[in-house]
Image (cartoon, rainbow, N blue to C red; front, top):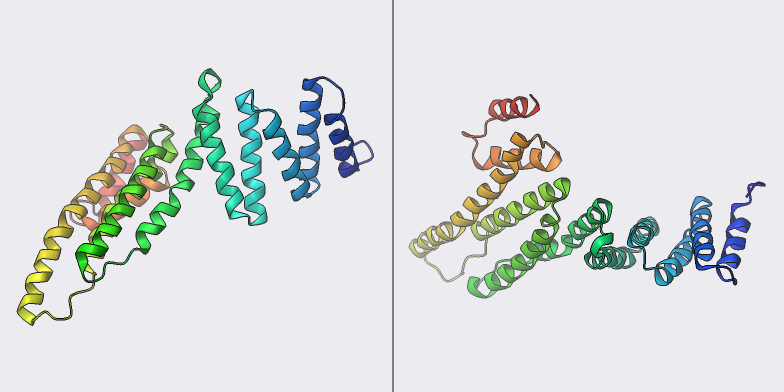
Length: 263
């Protein structure tokens, strides 16, 4: 280490970790080896070393989750999407069984992981097109929506402010998306002009409650300005409300809310 040869030092620490020393010494050596590999830009070696660390030292929880978080970042840097998602899932599971070892930091990392893990369910919902016959495709889309709502609900349940506001925004947008998709859904080809007009009215009646739900959930986020919370997700909810209810949420009114929030 003193000569600046971090990779060789890391290799020596690995040797110590596999030796006959105490568990504390071997554990520290493995951690140091991973740090040095990572610092030297040796991503695969750092990943392999941290993986061994996680497998061997599940307790105490805090350093185990920190190791898992570093593995998330290494997977992200290498473009390994599957590994990134697996390590995030492990963070959630490790935090869930931590008991008295659970900390604000482990809960925060678990909440952030759950927020990311919710994204595929959201994307699957968005990807479900509403085509004729509407009843069949709408069932598929509603089922996917329920999965996405549950996933974002779990993220919000951690009580981490920045995650809660993000999850609230995403939930509101799920309702808003369904409302828009109903309006834009494929019309049956065999309808006459009069029947098409009636069909459009029925679609509006189906879509309107979802738009109202979107407004209600966005307003939950907007109300957080009174608690001094004004992050990017609250701003996005306010912007969404400006489009959904332009008279009530005009730009000048949003500015007044912000001034009130920071006083």
